[in-house]
Image 1 (cartoon, one colour):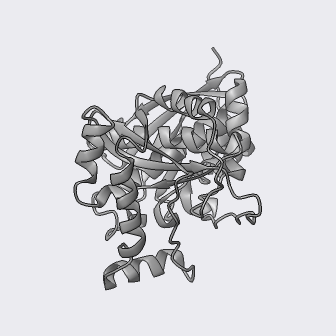
Image 2 (cartoon, rainbow, N blue to C red):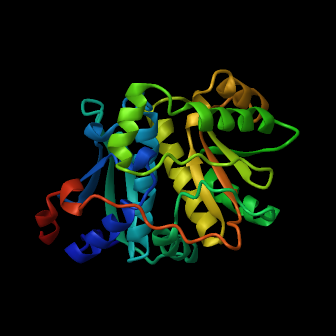
Length: 299
């Protein structure tokens, strides 16, 4: 097994893909450090959105998604990864240490890598066509390889309560001066996106048996798997955590949908409307702001 280390160009490409991961309010709450024979992921607490994410749950989901994006970005360039999550209890912001070794990518990884630049968070109303069950099964099966539970909220199950929570968030989540100021700071001059929740979209709920930092990081990895798979299949998608903050929604989803597991994030999926304009890519922080020690790549 050739462990070696990728050159700077390879690492830059992989991290450019990693930072395309979704994050609440586009906060991009991650830091990367290169050194020795590992890539290290840290939580960027200075990028946490405190009023809407006081526990840092969304931060960990975003970092988990970025970790999965990085692994895909390395795999497609011929580098496999071995991940040690939360490797140092004395350093809680150190979320993952990633060792690298050479290995050929699989066809699924090539497809997921191609989806990264094309993925968008699409909160608009979707087309009336429902995604085929084969697409949903593929996304669920892929995501559950991470150890996370993925269940579809159906009309006969927890969907009515979840849709109610989504609608409530759309109308009320922006109330309060602290939240408004926070959103203005993160979004710049963007108008608040208030989605329409229709009968055509599919709502997947991702849950974990534990409700700790490791579970949330893992849920972020599964979220990335779902969103990139959806993009590769031609589906529109977005991740939602706000509805889980509505009173009674978490226990209802845990009981009715997840066999007692803890809901972490909701994925909304569907076909974009045929006349929908392509969504622009959101801005990303320069790599120099999020990566430390690129010079170490040369060793």
